[in-house]
Image (tube, rainbow, N blue to C red):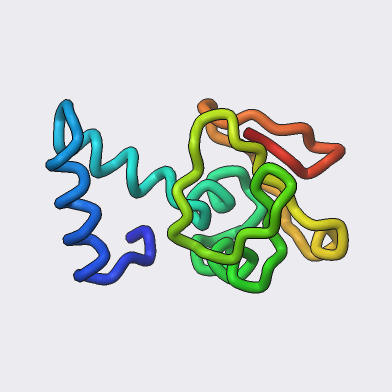
Length: 109
């Protein structure tokens, strides 16, 4: 689930416990905010593994800059898009309600 190993999950839990509010909700928000998960939720990858590969192969941009770190935390109003050369390879699926996108540009926030 989320492609996170035990040590990294423990670090996410510690961070969630440190933040104000419900630890479980904070943990879920941290995991859902990972770049590879956002790419998957936006439908740019058919699976989380495919989304992670898109990120690691520098096919994803955040706010116009290439990001190749799958654990990058996407913030509200960040624009996540696919690089021009990778647009031909993507398999776009329907979006989740909390994400918005411009289908013609293959970008979203």
